Image 1 (cartoon, rainbow, N blue to C red):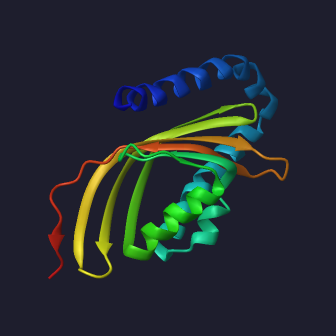
Image 2: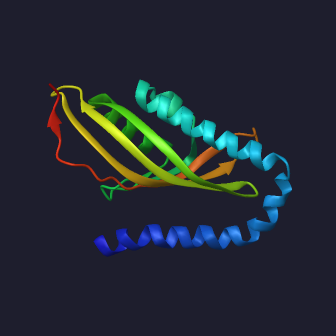
Image 3: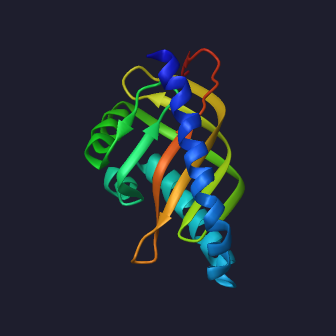
Length: 168
């Protein structure tokens, strides 16, 4: 089971890369709009960090496709909007979060896109005041919907954090 979970993200990324080979030609379809699309994806990340900080579950849900797949460092797979709502609602019910993202690259392949980068975070347990800070990397895959908005279809991240400490 653990071997499968380790291989699953790699298989997914290979499939995405294969589907994007044809999408390279489709990227020209955007022409001058490619920059605007990259800016729209940057705005997506701004909305994401704002939603995480405010704890606004509905705003966060509006950023994801119905078929969202989340691959957190814990190894558990969160699939679908309902499962994501339950997962993020539990998390934000327990923790206050601050997260800073550095987007290293955005690639647009027609109506699909990928963005990756690094992040640092500070998570405070609401009840105990225990703070966890850390860093990591992320990759998000997007799909351009008919309404012109980029929706995240897949999200995976790593997390490296030192031992938690009690807030003073």
